[in-house]
Image 1 (cartoon, rainbow, N blue to C red):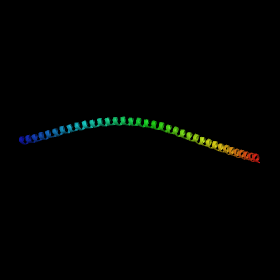
Image 2 (cartoon, one colour):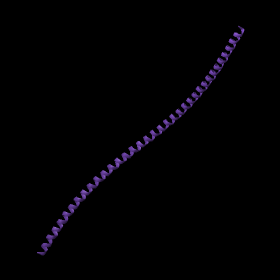
Image 3 (spheres, helix red, strand yellow):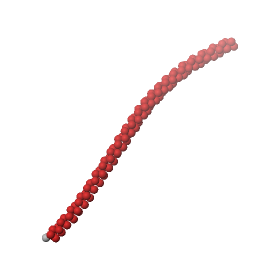
Amino acid sequence: EISAQEQQLSALQEQLAEVKQELQGSEEGMDRQREQKMEAQREVEALRKLLQAATQEAEAAVGALESQLEEAQAALKEASENADNAMERQRERGMEAQSEVEALRKQLQAANQDADAAVDALQTQLEEAQA
């Protein structure tokens, strides 16, 4: 019986050693998992910080672009108003020039009529002088 008990004890000791090894391997695996989890958390935090910085940069860039857009819109509005004003002035000058041309045409017609009348008067005087 003692030999059988010794064999059982020896088998139990072997099983206990195996269980201890498994436990130790299990603890090492858990340690590795904890380390991996902590590393993953550090990477997530680093990525979160990068994302935050990129977001801030993007927001600043958007703000700058919005400011440039507002400036460009204001410049475009001013240029459009200037062009409208220039076109209005040009139209007014054209109308003034047309009025001046019409007045000069009337003066020319009157001068032609005066010249025709003077020619007629001179011709009449010439005919009278010849008679």
